[in-house]
Amino acid sequence: MSHDSARTTFSRRVRLARGVSPWLGPVVAATAVTSLLTRRDRRWAFAAAPLAAVTGGMLWFFRDPERVPGTARVLAPADGVVLSVDPQPDGRTRVAIFMSPLDVHVNRAPLAGTVTSVEHVSGGFLPAFNKDSEANERVVWHFDTALGDIELVQIAGAMARRVVPYLTPGAKVARGERIGLIRLGSRVDTYLPEGIIPAVTVGEKTIAGVTGLDHG
Figure: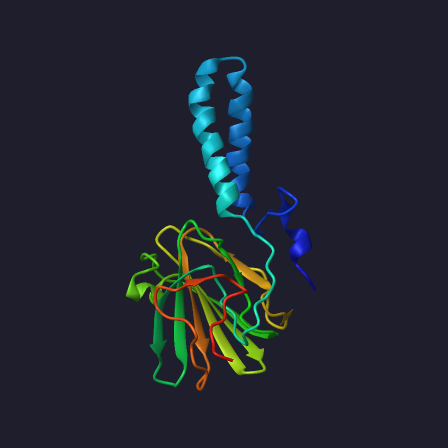
C-alpha cells in the first residue's frame, strides 16, 4: 500500500516528508502569530522575520520530491555523498552515504522486496561523517530481496536526533519506495551482498532511488 497520500502537500510538485509535523508545526504557528502581532506593533517584526526565514528553511529541508527509479539492480537509499566503500569480513560491501542538511532526507528502498525487520538501536550522536558514528542512534533494516538479505542502516548524526521509519516488518516495498526519514544531517549505510560489485566511489554524489550502487 502506498504511503504517499499521507504526506503534506505545499505545492503541486514538491511535498513535505511524513513525520515532520512535530518540528514544523510549532514554527509555522509561531510565524503566523508573530506576523499577525506585527500589524499591531511593528516591533514584533524582529521576531516574525527570523521565524519566517526558519519556516522557509524547514520547508526546503523537509521537501520530498517525486523520483523515477533508476535502472540499476541496487539503488542508492539516500541523497548525499559517498563517505566510504568498505569490504566487510563476511564478504559484503558497506556503502556509506553522508546526508548534509542541504540534502533531501527521505530515504528509499534500494530493492524491491519484503521488510523482514526494523530495529531501533540506542546510541550516541557523533557527527555523521565521523567513522565512529556507526555506533550512533540508528534504525537497522533488513529486506528479503531477489539478491537475498539486504541490510540498510539509518544513522542519526550530531543534529539529527530522530529516525522516523515509515514501514513495519512484513510490508512489501517497491524499488525506490520511501521507507523513512532522518531529521537533519545524517548517514545511511547499505550492505551489498557478497559478489555485488559497487558502482560508486568515495566522494560521488548520489540521488535516492535513482543512483545505482552496483554494476548490475
